[in-house]
Length: 160
Image 1 (cartoon, rainbow, N blue to C red):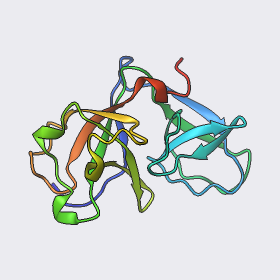
Image 2 (image 1 turned 135 degrees about the vertical axis):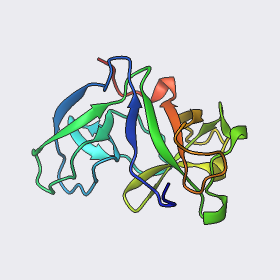
Image 3 (image 1 turned 90 degrees about the vertical axis):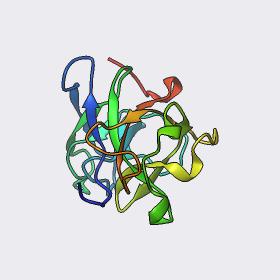
Image 4 (image 1 turned 45 degrees about the vertical axis):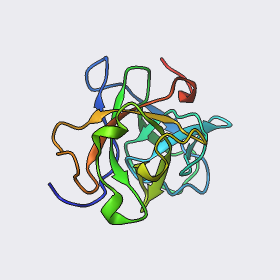
């Protein structure tokens, strides 16, 4: 497996691959496919790293930079598991660890890629995810390895 941060993606959903809906992009957006987004005044906006925001889902297409453009979004609903890379400012510490399973953590954005912030495991300041498991495709201790996470119950902007 490559030792690089990879974009977040839906790993498991109660409905199989999950649901996709289209939303209008807000003005001035620069999110990339795989970034978490939310609705602000009805328009799609990128989630900031370490922010305590409610989430609609993962953008499936890069922002166009043009307001009102339709962007497909993979919805994050209860039961959906998201595959995300581990991240730490010290690359040698950006690893998957069994001890992190079940912990609450926050998100960090690095190079337009949303990651699990392993530096703040167990921190409840802006913790929007619960780590469910290490992705079975990745070994414990893998640098930038993947976790499967779920949003905390109060961080779903809506569920269909």
